[in-house]
Length: 121
Image 1: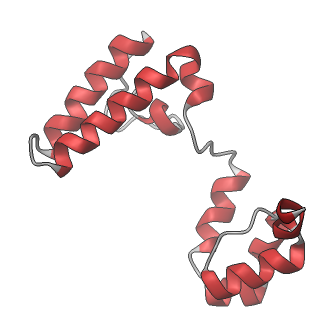
Image 2: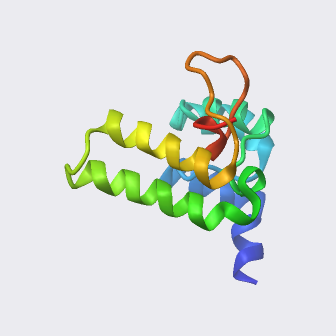
């Protein structure tokens, strides 16, 4: 019942206006009131229209837990200053190639990537 309530159009509209919570109803991203209160929502709308995935599980499949852990460890190493961001990213790319068997993407490639695929192809 509570989930149904939260999914209602009027509730999502109110929450996006008061708390800046992105709605799950696509047409609310075109609502002038919502866009005035949250101008960056126009970027979200473009992302949804392009089919952005929030998790890389579709690309990584059964290796998702390993990929997720590799990301976590890379971010942790940067936040705890054990590695520079550049070194952690390079190491992460190497790990992702090893975990997934996919090839590393060449810098500046124009192919669309999502989630873990951003670092691998």
